[in-house]
Length: 406
Image (cartoon, rainbow, N blue to C red; front, side, top):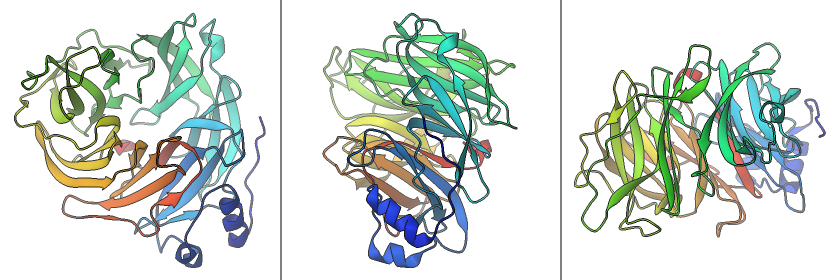
């Protein structure tokens, strides 16, 4: 794999390189030159440029109004997919070999390769590769979903301690999350505010579905929570069960799920609904929400669910588009926006300044790929200047933000 150091080139060269790799900006964006007086976040998108078989990382600075400007040296020629960040490091799953690559995030947001950690040596008979990466709220530990690990039969979450001085990863152990996640949008679990309990949900065509409660030990190891259980409300008429699709958590002890009314296997019985659950001291989840008061989503199948840093907004994205709800703690979420886009959205992240960044699904009808930016508060919402940006075959997105609200 080829790693390159930071490049210092002119803004003209940046826009030429960006255009060549499919990162197109409008004429007024190019003339703007900078994202504004203040940079509020750095945004990184792994993608496959047109006529290329390897990936690159497109990196942007986001201004106060959400406008994006390519960073010096972007796109970085690194063949990676899923990513996670701390304040100092970007970690990415290598596409060529079973390693997690660490890149130092410099003061101006550019990336410099530091080291790689081979995760396959810890599993034996590892047939797959790394999926989503995520860190805990403190940024001390990194976790990786590894597909077809553990004797080529199951998926696992592997736990690592981060060396903050050099970016290397110390292996702590793994937890087997089994086969039900095959073929499903299986994203990073959501840690609640105590930074101990985390939750995830997966649904593969209403055939394989599961809600998982995890816990972080004092050493950083992620494992099953032996006290986890969840009480789902009764589904609406015409459905036998609720199938959870995605999970997101606020900064206290509330967990949101998208819930699909269904008659499994494979028979959905209405649009997904959005509900709130409360974690007790042992990490078990209960709810007072009912099928009658949980709002219905216009997103027909959730690929991603993200809570805003304030805990007041909940974004649902997937097939059918992107929609935002008011999140009200233990009470049911309430309707806020309609569909902000009807493009199929694969993944999204908030920053700490009310911006939501979302990439379309590679290979979807929305091709060529797009990167959307929205400015959303509890009282107003609008698309940011220059959005959407055209980007070839987006794979994953990550936003560097305050880890206390990651």
